[in-house]
Image: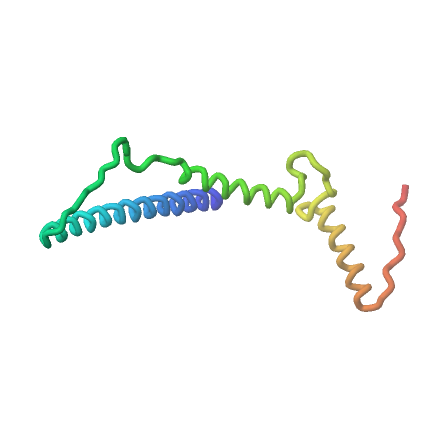
Length: 133
């Protein structure tokens, strides 16, 4: 349940950032156009000649899907790095025995931790016991 809220919150933040970026770009573009028009009017009022160049075939800003590809790249990089550090256990790689989430793994961990603790204090580790057959 918490993971779903986190994903929704992350998507809201991503789309909010995209919206803010697009809005800021559009505002800067409009501001630049209005300043350019104002400069042309001031120059004409001062008696200067103004030549406005219009590029034929200019279709305006083009669309590049970088806004959508960047998050995929970012999450892909995190998953790749996480997979490297976790190992290939999820995809059928080498298993390293039971983990600490079950009783056997917890027991083995506690035995190793107790042995390490005894060695740190100078006590000799107990002799290993052989299981009865």
